[in-house]
Image (cartoon, rainbow, N blue to C red; front, side, top):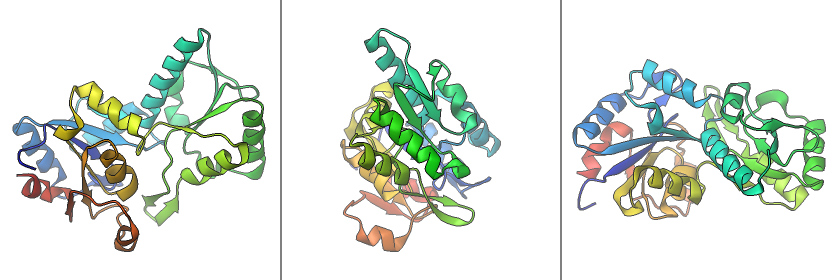
Length: 261
């Protein structure tokens, strides 16, 4: 870059912290960026914690941020549903298949598991079973549309990589012949909403994350440069097979200032 970006977007888990530990140098990196007047936003597809819980977790780890600097997929879904509700002129019925912690972010709508207008799909852990899949198939066959908080392929856990909800989103799309409305990364609209909220153009922004698909690939679809960190879910073999070419590749977020200045 010929000059510092005016806005830097950060993925959370795997990029700034792993579990309950901040990645070494991450806190200092963010402080230095703020000192240089760079706007920061924190983006996550995490669907197991509410926005309030995510902000509290970051602060507990030592990060300083305002609540409105963190944008998660559940909040994006709420905004989208509010827009759809306004367009329809009536209260929307939803079936929120999400972790209990984030149901508070979706509390403005009528809960209906039998005739929903929208199924809202997030992470429900071990609750998946064939009966549930068939119930979802039938409500979608009867008219319900699918909103997915994201369509991630896999994610990093303490026990290693695990398949993410993209597995179920793709399957439901296939059996219902419908296309899910994706809220989080790598959705272009998600990134555009973030840019609009700051009043920035894509050319003035940089996305930093450990996911070559959702973080780097998604951002670069709308002209935001991407920086891949080799922490978290990064796997060299997966990266070698990817068609996505990041603007920058660094070992860890603490090297960020060395490549953008």
